Amino acid sequence: MTACAIEEGATTDDGGPAEPEPDPGPDGPAAAVAEAAPAEAAPAPGAPAAAAALEADTPDAPAETVLPAFMLTADGAYGARLTAAPVPGADTAWYAERWTLDGPEPYAVPLPTDQPEEAEAQVVPLADGRVLIRRRVAERHTFSLLYPTGPGTGELLLGAVERDALVLLPPSPDGVSAYALAVGAYSTELWRVAGGTAGPEHLADLPGRCSGGVWLDRAGRMLALDREPAGGGPVKTVAVDLGRGAEMTPLLQIAPDSDDRLLLADPDSGLLLIRSDAPGDDRLGWGVLGSCLPVRFPECLRLPDRSVVPFAVQPGQMLMPESCAVALRIDGAAGSWIGLWRPSGRRLHQLAAPGGWLAGSGVWSRDGVLKLPYADGDTACAVALLEMPEEAECAGDVSGKQPSAPAVNPPVCTPVPLGQAPLVGRTVPD
Image (cartoon, rainbow, N blue to C red; front, side, top):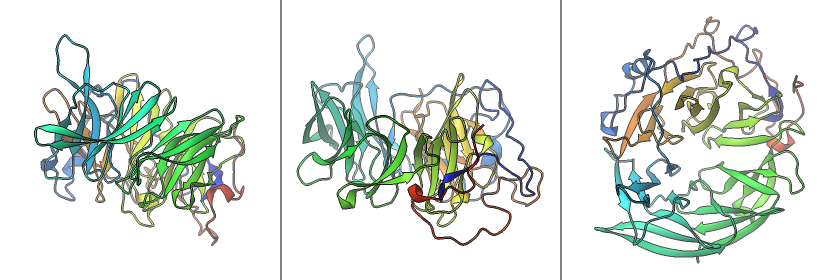
């Protein structure tokens, strides 16, 4: 991937400019509320009715989202969140809750302890069904594993880290480890807080102020972080190799002075979802790890006055990054809703979220079904199933699709690390 090159405008197969996606208007998506079905009501593979139902016209506005955040394991088998106990007339009493999503029907298991949790506590589900919880106790951050034990909740104390601020990273793909960052004025501490040999373990001091956290492989070894230099400067994504003492190498640099952040990565296909201001303003783009082609910034992903953030990529598309379905959370004045998009297409399908969607959470199956966890007033734990709408595939179709490569065969070149990609084909921002 030529990370230092950008392609700002989309083109059609005949080389002309691509027609931008129509603006859906200020009231949210132009699609209907997606049918919220339990997991056992999944449509048969290849059933065309689901996609047609998703884009039926309706004036309904997106439903309100449910807070706090919901965290999924890398394979989507388990989820965890803090939820409020129904105690009328009293202060909110939070407790951890684990969701099981890989069975025939989703179900939730409450994990209350002897006292309510603070709203600022963080939970991360592990592959064995236990839930890691981070609590703030004065100047210390304590870590425990919660698990159901018959009518009660078992708790295994792992240890504590004494720092002013510490944030858990997304669940590791290995399913057993959990990591956290403690950001200082000039460096960032990387901690393994679960999965080690004896409690929280300090792994490295990384230069600069690091944030984000995207896993690049299935083994939980390569971690991408967005790094701001200690003395200030543009944010660039770096790769941290946990198998080599947290060795840090440049990963993403589109332009010397641009802020380039990695939002999401698919280890199977190498598809990367990137946010950068290299085109002149802050834009959402995509590229492929190890490719010689430039980063692209599709017009259809540019929605004025709205936030667009990818949260799930279809796995299993080996050597086919352009065919991966991507789910995006769209936030606007009307609330939050869903965007579905493929790099090979030039259309962003905007669909209303199911009522009670745990906003920003979801997972794709390998056959292209998006599972969205939700909890509304009638259902405490459920999953809505969405399918990617059909798109025109014929070359020369007026509805077209955004090509992901030049019309002619590109020259053969050896893939290079993103930080070493040549400055070829970069357009000058206006």
